[in-house]
Amino acid sequence: MFYSFIRVVARVILFLINGNAHYLNKEKLPAKNYILVGPHRTWFDMIYFALGAAPKKFSFMAKKELFKNSILRFILVHANAFPVDRKNPGPSAIKTPVRWLQKRDLSLIMFPSGTRHSQKLKGGVILIAKLAKVPIVPAVYQGPLTFKQLLTRKKVIINFGDPITVDPKGKLNSELEQKVIAEMTASFKKLDQEIDPNFIYQDPKQADK
Figure 1 (cartoon, rainbow, N blue to C red):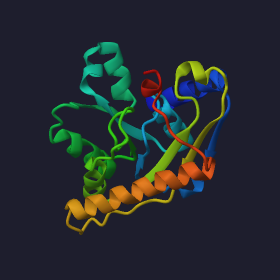
Figure 2 (tube, rainbow, N blue to C red):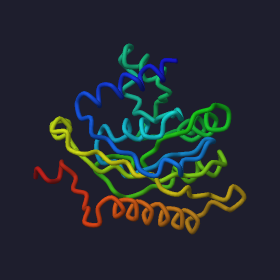
Figure 3 (cartoon, rainbow, N blue to C red):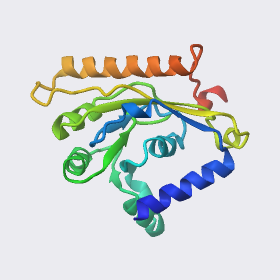
Figure 4 (cartoon, rainbow, N blue to C red):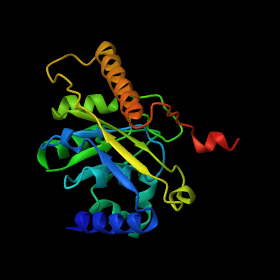
């Protein structure tokens, strides 16, 4: 109930702030659980991913420091977030999402690059998908990259791609990892070009230097 409530609140707030969101290819989203992945471009792209893929509900990884505040911890826990130590991720960083994908009606949103300031994809999502036996669904965000830009009501577009299957019986080695990473990278590029053939992402943090 809390997740549904928060989702409604987020949808209303974003509509009032921006009101110019568009979601493409929603029909490609699986009915059962999956991992929704994308390049991390702004702190609010995760919110747009979750809204665009509704009515499906999602879980999220959040850095453990956010759970120190009791009020924020309450919100995060009831919004299906779980803590992860980014510097020293333990077994729970894999076991928790795998268990939730298998046992709960919750999909998972992940950013394979880890942060907004890196475009290098990592293999954690592949291991989770393999163990949980769920597909990876690529998506991209194009639109404002800062809250100030969001207020200008510039168009926001989320484009969903074809699911990528990780063979649960295949051996997870560097060859398989690189193969799936290449598939995700190619899909992100394709989805971006479908929106805007001339699109080039520029990290706002780097642009200010």
